Image 1: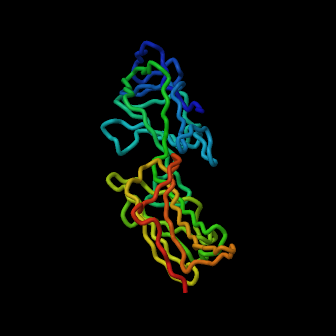
Image 2: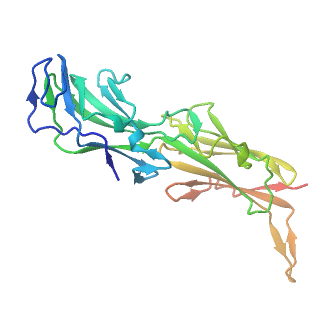
Image 3: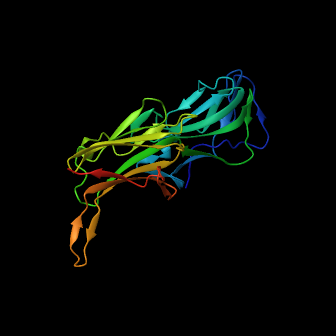
Length: 282
């Protein structure tokens, strides 16, 4: 699904304008400027591979749109804080531009803070002219940070006590978020980490009490990618056995298994050579 922001659809032939005069659109161009008639350039975004107009309260209407001149890539020439407020006609100094649409702040680590962005390159603005794109174009914005959640599971047995927590780090060095079994202690619902080139490791350190035993366990995943959603699962079970009469006897310890689920439907063990840790209870 897509909602039109603006289009760079112009007449098939560029129209030369006299410097400083009004174009036929009624918008004035100063010397050295050109115009963009924005009618068929659209913006949409993909949330976990699903194209959406609005998901979890995020609307394309609220995306920011930047016009960025090639020679000054760090400083947008013109910015519209909301694409819904984009005018029909955009006037820019002559030059070569990319158009970037984005949502969110892309912080090193933050709660409930997805960052989407996408861009379209190769737009040339000619002084005194209206520039034309040959066809309708779409800026498709993708989730560009790393989404992480933590799942504590003991199947209702009460093996994991409420002091259990997992400190997760990813992306920039030193950035962490702490997830709690007791969600009332948690600052948000889902963690988002800024994706950093060359830094693809997620580390999760579990600490907490399991049946009166203090436990510390760390796992590492080295293939994290921007735009992906990862759920780190800490599953605690207590072995049981039964005799010939069917009498169930609790085991002498508890098992801690760790897996990572990805939004593409795959689940894997980050430590395949060590299926679980056995913790002896007191």
